[in-house]
Image (cartoon, rainbow, N blue to C red; front, side, top):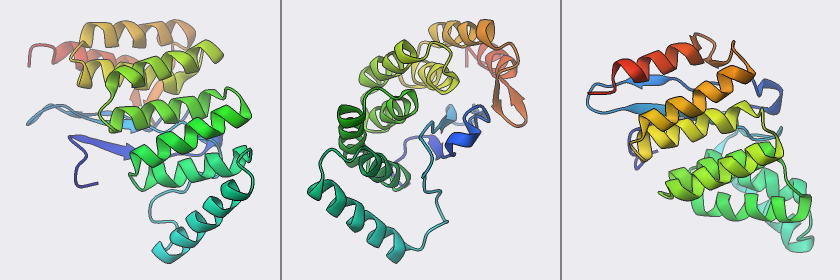
Length: 195
């Protein structure tokens, strides 16, 4: 987590897809944001697994994909581990293989987009979120993350707000955390546009 620019990564399970856990952290000393992980079930939340267990799980999954390169579930779980342990390039590879072997999955595509962002490739992140939205035009995590990349990595708050407003047309009650609506986040970004 030491080299994470000014954002925080939070994870979630598939059962909580609409319980988005990102929110704007404020604008003291620069904009800080959280990124929503849209990954499928099997996500390993930080602190849930001992380091030795995590290494063993990773080794077992690597063995599985070496033995069966078409094992989509193993590639996805491996991507989730790499996501949660800030191994962006390895996560990109694993998620790409999961999509190659298992077809288009908006949650996996969105997680891939987040990893592109964290690897310093915001353009690829935007393309990837658009790919997720092509699969599911109402997929909230892709909308929210696309807006975050536009606002914070590409310095285009107007376009970010436009993206988030598209989501509000689909779901006027969209939440970015249990305590913050998307409407509140949009207002926050508008109010701090000049700062």
